[in-house]
Image (cartoon, rainbow, N blue to C red):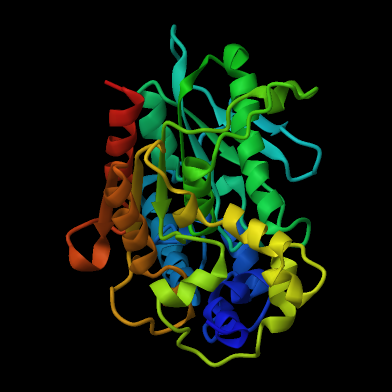
Length: 361
């Protein structure tokens, strides 16, 4: 694959991360939709971490009708419960904060960690689904939701390590917060989905000799889930798996290298650039000793039709499923388009898979 073709192959995700113009307004390229997603995370109907204009309009209609029903019933709608511990610092950056919703138990509890989506450019931990928190807490499972640095703050390989540090920090606090270190799961939509797969497949980042006690802890998971996520952040691989990008846009060649924190476009093909891209290639990292994963996608498995379809195409999930089957890692895959009877948000199926592997009654 020549360099120009490779650049076109990664164009779709750069629309999210580097600010190029997409054909359809969504929270990755429209500040109003981005602010609405941060304030009303439930407006993201398919849970992929990206709020489209149509989702926003549908949510506004539901909000109006919900308020009317509540007024008629003399009650108001309930939202997300208050965290047991809110905005706890797990790292040095201002966005290195997390919330913990602690389950009541006499024994250490399993932990489900939510990682928000938003193209590594937006989103917030408040996007965690209240129904997931409710079901987990009732089942004796604690929940954490994390923030992490955006592309304006750090390259992708460092953003992913924010999530790893959050997992390590939660283990470091396990005794104080009554968490079972061996039973930790992670999930998210879109960017949070890819990050969860990266945590599932990357080698353990624990450094037993570190002066930082947090970094001595394991970064590994017991189980993970990807909801409309990506199979790799080495964009050279995308066209071979997903197909060519379906829309015409300005060339991203001048921006791609910055995604990895490189100083020159040619650095993409240098030993350093190749090493970085391999480090963020979830499909390449996947091996037989990795944890079970749950993957789902709402899109149709046809040639990509637009930007959102390309970035959240079911072929991302299918590629992970095929590799898991090949190496012997358990993987449950749900494709909404192939089974319309499935709910738009597969949280019940995901939690059933989680609880099985977290040994929750």
